[in-house]
Every structure is written in C-alpha cells, then in structure tokens.
Image (cartoon, rainbow, N blue to C red):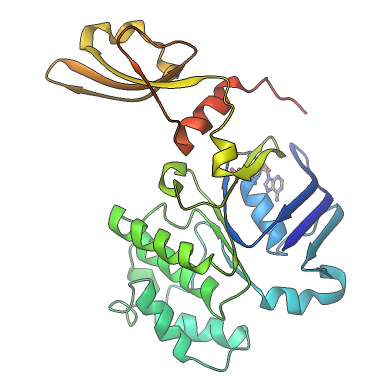
Length: 285
Ligand code: ADP
C-alpha cells in the first residue's frame, strides 16, 4: 500500500497537489489529458523526484529512512525510456538485474519470454522497433517481481495482439501486487482495472472502482443509426464513435436525451471518461 499525504510539487507553470490518497494492491489505471500531471505522479511514486512538501509512505516506510528498501520494491518503466542502444535486451536485463542486486539471472529469461522478446534478445537495442523497446523497458521493471510496478503508457507502441498479452500479464501480476499504469487507452482496461485514478490540472478528480467510475454520471450513452447526411445535426463533442456504412452513420454518443430511435447503453470506462471530461466545470489553479 502506498499512501500520499499533503503532497505538493511546484513547477513554474504547474503544480500537483494530492491531499490524501491511498493506492492499494491491484490494478490502478491513471488517466487524464496531456499535462495533467500523470508522469509527474508516477515519478513521485517511483522516488525519482521528491515532493516539495508532504509525505509518501510505502507500507509504512518513508523515503527519508528506507530509500534503498523502497527502491528495491519498485519497478518503474517511464514512457520512452532511454535504453542502452548498443546492448542487447538480454544483456541489458542482466545488467539491470545486477544493479537491482538480483543474483538469479534466470529471471531475465523468464521476462524475455513473457514479454515476447526472446527471439530478438540478442539484437542490439538500437535496431529494435519502438514496440520491442517498450517491451524491454517493461521487462526491466518486472525484474525481481517488485511489490509495486509503475508503468507509463507501456503499450502505446504495441500492436493490438501484443497489447492484449500485456494486459493479461499485468492483470495477473496485479493479483497480489500493486500495479499503476498510465494510459490514454482507457477502453482497453474494461473489466481489468480494479481502480481508476483521474488526474486533471494536478488534482485527483476521481479515485475509485470501475463500478463507481461508470455510476451516477450526469449524461447518458446512446447508440443508433441515422442517415449519413443527418450526422451534421449531432454535435461533434457528443460523438463517442461513428462509422459510416452504406450511407448510414452508426453512432455511439453521449447526451441528456436520446435522439429519436436511439437506445440507451451501459457506459463503458471510456464513455465515462468522455462524460466526466465534458461535464467538468472549468478548473483553474
Ligand atoms: P502528463 O504526464 O499528464 O502529460 P506531466 O506530469 O508530464 O503531465 O506534466 C505536467 C506539467 O508539469 C506539464 O505542464 C509539464 O510541462 C510540467 N513539468 C513536468 N516536469 C517538469 C519539470 N521538471 N520542470 C518544470 N515543469 C515540469
């Protein structure tokens, strides 16, 4: 469990303020628009940066007193992590395992396999695709099976099949550990996330279960089919999805009332995000 109390980060054009937040074991998915503080939040959790004020406790331990022990129990993959381009994934993981003080290098092979990068494990990292590099970054974070795994957009360069495998792997990992994933693809986490954390302008706007995230929303979700030329009558900001087939527009949208012939749908995680964003009062700090 990680607990933040009165944590503040002050940058010239941005401040992050978290008064009271407890992250529990399981999968927490962090969402928010660009610049809302998601990366800063993960960096704080990873002990990569220190708060200007406030306290973060890791199962009762503090950075001041227990930094090496806390770091040993954290795996972190920043987005676009800089890797040693001349090393191979296998060599890099062995090197990282050494830095983490792990004697057992057989774990290196295990993560290469689990992240499907075993076949490219002897190629220089500089010659890998973005997606393969991303998997190497995730693999190094998993080394030592840390109690807390922190991943910043771990699947943004993966194809849909690899994404599916990664989701399954992380869901399994989160069964008895704490996993925090920053993502722009909330839809992928339907039925997988234990909790959603929504950050906006450096503030926690929501932290709760999937059920709480999709309940009590101020707008509804509707789906329906209209003639393509009627599409102009629907406000673009209310459209969640629209595909045009044989002159008909197949629509998923949000609104207060359904257009004629539309039926109400149960909101997905992504629908709930759109609704919450659209219904949000203007925030300024
Ligand atoms: P997100 O990950 O949600 O896109 P970030 O946490 O990366 O947001 O950034 C939040 C804000 O903090 C941005 O406005 C960014 O410019 C600012 N910021 C991040 N790191 C620093 C830094 N080291 N110095 C000054 N400003 C920073």
